[in-house]
Amino acid sequence: MSNKDKDALFTKTQFLSSRQRPGQEKDILASVLEDGKHYTIAEAEKAIQSYLIRSVK
Figure 1 (cartoon, helix red, strand yellow):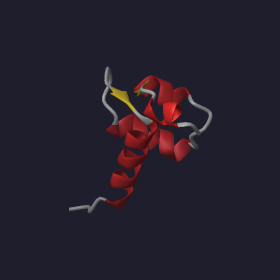
Figure 2 (figure 1 turned 60 degrees about the horizontal axis):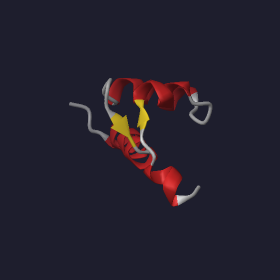
Figure 3 (figure 1 turned 45 degrees about the vertical axis):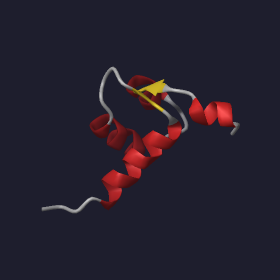
Figure 4 (figure 1 turned 135 degrees about the vertical axis):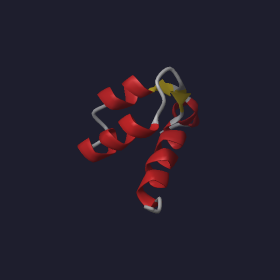
């Protein structure tokens, strides 16, 4: 993946329609990403990881 691809911005809808994400990751992204905002791939990955390591109260 080139630096240009890493810096590209995508919407929540684009991440959810991507074939590169398995079902569980799409479910996580659907709940943590905001509608109308744009995210880099790194930001989406960070959101997934943050969700997976969160503590449950």
